[in-house]
Length: 94
Length: 256
Image 1 (cartoon, rainbow over the protein chains, first blue to last red):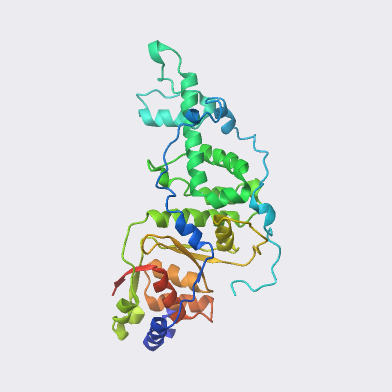
Image 2 (cartoon, rainbow over the protein chains, first blue to last red):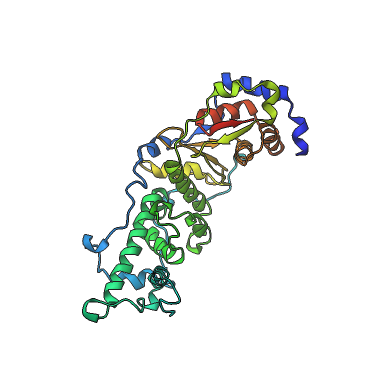
């Protein structure tokens, strides 16, 4: 790598010294604590017999499930309350 | 349809499972030689519902964002087009983000694929091998004249997701209880996902941070990673980024 020469031992050593005494530049995501609580994701995943739950007719949904032309839904969750990508005045990535 | 002599049983069975138009596998019969069409449809439905439920558990923020009805309908489409390739259900959904990126009804949410990527990376980190994270003292012990050429080994759970949108913020607020307010979605956020011990954590990287870690994680020495980051972002702070990756538990080992 041609740019390697600009990175000197002194530069890296200085950075390391400051790293070991200074704080992190990474911002912990505000939702991380909530995500931390969700330890069970994946652990309990298994195939489920939906018939037993009586959610719907066992065989009736199968062809509809797979119908490629039946998709007419529009998103209706929290996306409705979020700003959908308006141009931002803030600089990209600080 | 090919018979069993030409095609292994499982392959013939799975082939019809995800193609309802093809009915049941020829060789499948009910008790006393009765037809098994309805029984097979029940089974097919259960497989589809089971996979859709698995996706809903793996991608809770994505589901919350688009709503349950939309998510489940989209997931059924994904299941049909992308049947599992692994026996492990926990491996499923690796390319859901790619599917979302190409799913026309979601064209108005260009950030959603990145949110799904973060959710999948979260699960990957959760199930990754355990390893003790590298601590600062171990870095401090590297002889100064070896630092530039030192290769740092990524922790098995460490994952990077780069986004041109505010994917980490959108992920975070939708994984929390409570209201989701307006979000400026066009602010780029690169995510570092780690699990140094038991808990998965996600951090937003500063400019240059993702290139720095990408270069390190692909096996290049520290000096090259710093150079790559500085090339992308002249204000890149090497010290603060080293401190950040140590604090996050993103590294497992030193190879000199």
